[in-house]
Image (cartoon, rainbow, N blue to C red; front, side, top):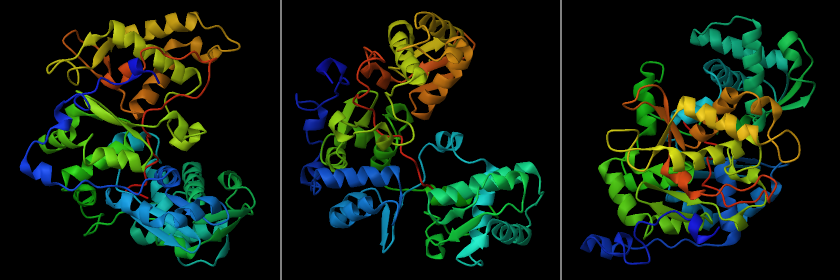
Length: 435
């Protein structure tokens, strides 16, 4: 990435606020120095994306964790995350995601989540090898004990199949033979499952005192609470694509202004093999090009990326930086944000689609021919990364407000060019309080 593509640095090497000690306490603070190595950084990134590593599927990853275990645990301790290492399992117990709404948008539905935990409860009492119908019967018994409805309808069966796939992804309940989808039409479909009872204890990553059924909101608040602002900021920089100043409380803002490029943030980025990018409106941990080979290594949502929707998102971000209304303390999320009316967004995408015919390097026909559908897809991508927010301003109507971080891509790459590009920090798969 060229220097012109970098974020405008607030402070740093030229004698800005990040280089000056703000107090005697700051000057005495001991700088944390990670045991940095390329393999350790790769292991940390792997765990952040895939909190479950199991033998037979992730043997290379487990071996790398064991080789670098002291350094990995040292870095994770800065985040307050717990690493469980057993004979056939490595499990990272992460904190709940800071942006629950973004996680929930691509997460399981309430019905799917309920059956996920009902199947876990039912799995405790079944044999290591069990038929699907028997496990479902045990889960329905757990539902009856908890006073939850059991309908036996197709919506319930679809939710059960989705929950089983989530358990299979974690290698807790694994499909051995048969087809899970067959259960949707036939509850007696012959499907053999393997239940790993020892792994059931690791399903819930975060615990809190009290009964969540009595006061779910209060229980979740206790689980999410982190009193240390420095730790909150470290977690957000690792777990979120970008951290915006407008979302921070005074203590978090102070940490961002004094420590993100100094004794705390920069060493953590180094441990993960990332680089700090800082500007007045926020900060991000960026993944250098040499740190990854494939986009799937960056988590479920990588950006920039090839494809119609990511390319449209890049071009739309460029248009917003040139044509968008400036945000302020009274308009939009805050200073540095750029706003476009939703109708203008659709028209801009219509214009862009018109110059990109179907074929090599072109956009998908069904999206190019339907700018509103394309706008919905672009919105979903950018919203998941917290690069766009919907709101209003004095002109009325719905506005798209583009994050100041989108200015880092001032010249979007041609989709026919190399698919490799320096990527904004991971939007990691979060393994929070619900799993």
